[in-house]
Length: 557
Image 1 (tube, rainbow, N blue to C red):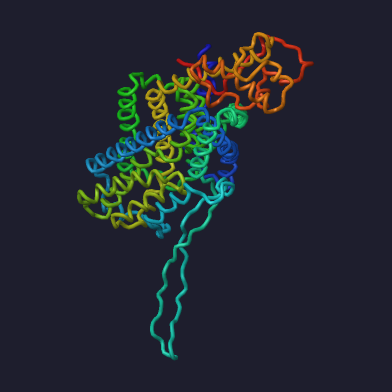
Image 2 (spheres, rainbow, N blue to C red):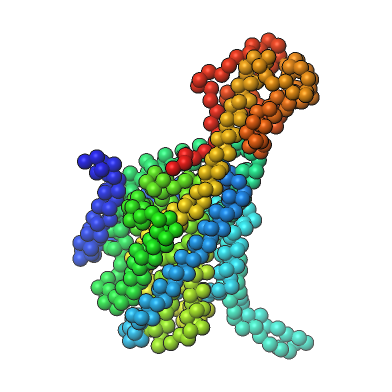
């Protein structure tokens, strides 16, 4: 009973998924109107808006507060390890998908002849896609990046008749001109780059940046508290989203019959990557049970399936990693936002399978060089898919590189609603395993940072005790007698303060050199330190409740 009560939200969310699927299929024979489907989807839409509303401040607060508590060296190492891991797992996912689609061979040219083709925008360039990715990494306006992102669009250029001396010498043909435009949507990649730099700079400021770090830590805690409340609405929201999604599908039976082998191929690839590849990699590095780790992530995985969004599941992923799997918050708050943007293992696998499937539909046999091109392009395209309007756009990028017809993407749109949810679960699981692995690889550095922080805390407490205690007990340095600390000029008071505070810093091997007081006027900022006044101030000792805790210190396991 205790376990059920503790995991009540998880059980309710899982139940909502099954109920949503059941109601969706049960309601299809009644052919509900579009208005009815919209009303069913409405609670889920509001739930998604709540999560997206909290996404931006959560990413900003979590990234800055995490990186500000690490040295630049530790931050750089963590960043390189994270990027290397993400690139490795994405390439493994792509390789798995290619091997399966070549082995199963789900594409049949007859299938394309029997299927009614839809229409889709084919104006897309691989070069423009990657240039947009870099543009979004470095936004020209950080405020604009919170609600708009760069995307290259193609506009029809009107023909111009060129004349010279009254004689026509040529005519420009109609052509599509690329135009860099801003479109609605959060530029998550740009926000992450800016916040990463901001957090690292704050970490270099030491005590001067302490108030700013405290602000972001408190903001992060407030947002997570709000998310915890909103997540109790998840069962209703997820139920409505899944139910409406199933009800609005046209010709579900025909779709299942025509694309059954394609769906099976993608699902097999996602299953192998998430159940075999990632757990084995996690176990080899950490020597911990991947089953127990996945069990701790269940709430986040169910949420990602219901919302079909890695970003919407981000708050739940934070909570599952830190509370259930005991991952250091400084790791999770950096690795997960970055992973939700660039680590798309499921998407890379899906793209590789889809592209080769379309080649098989057209009776095209890809050479080894073309297969390698597909694997590399799918890997790189998935990295930029976080800034794309839809995952299908990245498939067009890969199709373009091997000269396949982009319009054939319309054939697989009908099953994307299901595959999108499942590959999102794989993406979230991959991010979680990444956080667990990076936590294990950087644990020694984190312990060293924590030890230095504790030494700094003791040094500050020692300074406070000396400064607030009887002056006759204060070590006398070369600055002169103790009266200078109380009645001297500002210059003499600064000199006396430095002389006395340096005594305690030497005791801890100058551990506090970066973060300790640099000026006697800033010393009173700490809660346990009263201002250095004049002779009317009476010496006193700190009470037991006057304690100093260094900000952001994490407990060692």
